[in-house]
Image (cartoon, rainbow, N blue to C red):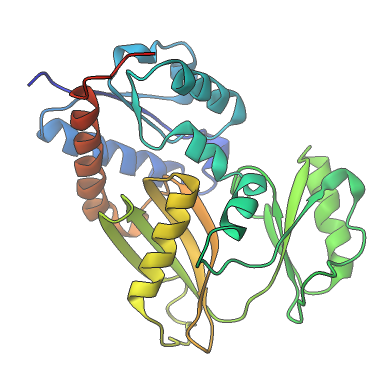
Length: 288
């Protein structure tokens, strides 16, 4: 069997706030695991990728999220079947919140917060009337997940929204999402597959109330959301409320896996190699 050739692309530094090292470390760890099982790998920065020819590779593993690079990957995805992407660029684009909200809102059986997508240029206007928010709102930039600590801001009073939206406007962000605050335990989770591997932990274990919930329900919600967006390597956030219900509030592509890096690297590499082997040996590969 000929070696699988894998190209890995790091995330842009501006899209890795306080996670620059962690993002690079998980990707390097995955490549180390792939090399152990006979995969030929190459790691590039986003800037190096801009000048590279990815068609020399069988698998492209890209953490990059900036829209110009996603456009290039999307065009490549549309023009050839010769490359297997993990995650597919269409899935990465689906993690832009303006795309995530409709996809997860319509996902059958998934509990997702009521949400409004608004234009930054229209200002904060009035508070949403379509849902209650007795504990305040979350205002979230509408595209990439997080570039700084004020991309996702809680407004305990709607009067706070004017400052948040003005900040979005100053950074040329065009859309934002408004969601109600949901009281409960905040859980972080990671997954591969979905269905191959899953783990979770409390965002703040010292403050968590440890409200009871069904772990199978959490794993099922994460998998349903990942499938709806098309993600294979993913992470996200969920809220467990007093009645044990689970609300998925965010999903993202290629998180840093910082707390479980060693185990995650093995699982991701297994998934990437399996996907690459199946793809390379598919008879229709490369056909238009």
